[in-house]
Image (cartoon, rainbow, N blue to C red; front, side, top):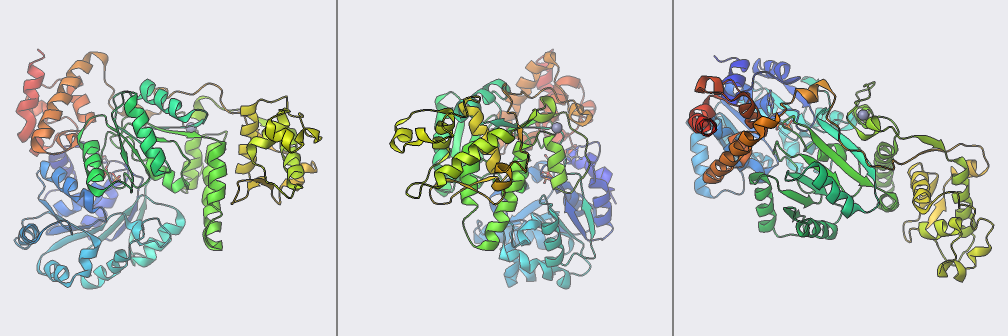
Length: 603
Ligand code: ADP
Ligand code: ZN
């Protein structure tokens, strides 16, 4: 029997396991149940794929990501793994073929949509074959409060009753204690061993930048730091998705939109282009990206504030799965806070309370003056990490300043405006009054006669916006849901009376750029020496043509990291090529000669 390490080397072509993988795999191979919490890009797939290859029988993978099953199976087949899937997109003949392969013992892995398990015929089919392991991917789908709750997933608790001897491994990247507990109880995994990997993604540089002109800022970020590279830009609304995609395209960046309002064909086509082409930018609502295993996404940009830290971390985690440097960039400003504070007031009481908790955590991350990564890891239960050196606040630590007096000026202006029963006022009017601007609206309401008129000339417009933003973030100020008018909160009084200090963050004036990552792990990622760059480009061109010919995404042929290593090492024999990370037995046999030819052209 092959050992897990044999399979890792021979089939996947990787030298060594990533953190956590080996223990998990050994445990499942030995027949134990497991619950695995690992960040996006951490390497969960191998944790069930290798046991499926080592143990006798077929590994059954339950996954909600129907649209991606074909790609997952293609990627496995490229490695020489016998994989198939059953879901609602197939016609009768296609299903028959897979079923007969399953029965004949000709499959190593079978991917199933969860609703298949409700169909008796599927259960009867599974009963006739030999199953090595059940893998429950995206296991947070059983959690009621998760965003993608699937009633089908509740059925999965019965697997253990029907197949008591088959080990089960449930995997998720959602790791808050509440979700963890819910997965455990709903899937009956109290007896399972729980593996909680580090949630750190050291190769991702985190940056949250003050929003001034978001489109221009985004364009500069893409041009300066990620020209010609693949990435995802997240926006809150469909209309902003459309506008930003058009804006980027007008500025010479290959970009396409993706949101639920587009028809299914267009969506599928844009997703396929993203997976298959090198360097496409997708501008999307959060509907995009779940389960996409494109390893070379070089950046994830947020033009709007995500609703929760969980959401933010999942979305940004889609960058840099290959371990090479990647950027998580967000532009964040006053309007984000106003909009989200208003949205958080919708729905019933319990829903509101949850939204507010999520939003407070997200705002605290945006406003922190200390390391973003430390805060993120702390949020996921990993306490006491060291400052990372690879986020904006580490690289250019923002100052904090005593903003008590400016806060009092804002709050007393709001207090005075609130006395006018006939009309409500938003941020703009408050700041105009503080700055002493005699605008038409100020004069119309006689606001130039207020005692606070002009008391804020010590700060500029942008700085006042920063003050109001942070007061909202700290809940010292609130917005009304219907008109967006500013109102005081229970905590405002203490500030007005001088009983409470207000600490504010001074926003960076100059934008921070990603420096070359300083952490050892991020450095370990293969760096490309300048002299190897032309060869790397030629290998990329060869890969693009080959992928096209075979109708698979480029990364299914080889990852960027593998091509970089080939370009750097310049192996001259098949044996040497076989030692490169990511070159397994099957790919060596299939592509080895061609790669050597590309290398020889260079000589
Ligand atoms: P997750 O499902 O946790 O988001 P994946 O299983 O898709 O992550 O793995 C992320 C990427 O890392 C994949 O491209 C995979 O091929 C690669 N990978 C996983 N394990 C290893 C390893 N031991 N060595 C090198 N690359 C790995
Ligand atoms: Zn940091």
